[in-house]
Length: 237
Image (cartoon, rainbow, N blue to C red; front, side, top):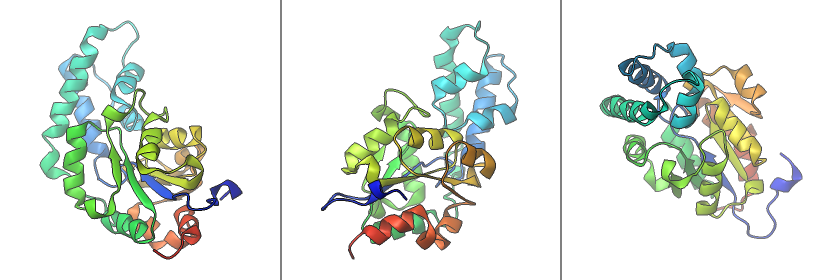
């Protein structure tokens, strides 16, 4: 951790979390939902290619996966189809092992806890219900809070502002390359989790300072992690 992470005076320390694929086991549900949406509009896009871009904003994902000479008037319909297909899987959503406990431990240590998600507002509400951890969450963002989606840092900036935390006093946890890049744009140390299906080497190459298998693995190693070093700077809550 750099010296800039030492908070002057009473400045608040915080940890930001992505949600899809980081706290909720949903990365592959998004993949199959995008696959189905593309198929509905005549685009046969391999699931592997889709999965690599999950975590990127929907408009960016569509633009990266479909031909540049496509009928762009269909883009909004494709995104709406993805949303409807994903919503059909809401009853199947489950928190990843250790997710609630990880949020609770960060909260108990006095850190501001923010969900920096670019999910649709309704999807985020459902995922928060699945997490059942609102007592440990200070603020949460959705797609409505950012002009540009990841890898642009807008959603992280919105979460930081809402939590009253400076980027120099924060750590970000995510599962996608786009999470790592968004954090890097603000100089925030990013912890990568492989539970979303992205390999550790890819996350490190994108800027992750540490990589763990999932929330449980991070929780069990919290003291030696970037979050642990933030906790060490916190007075006893």
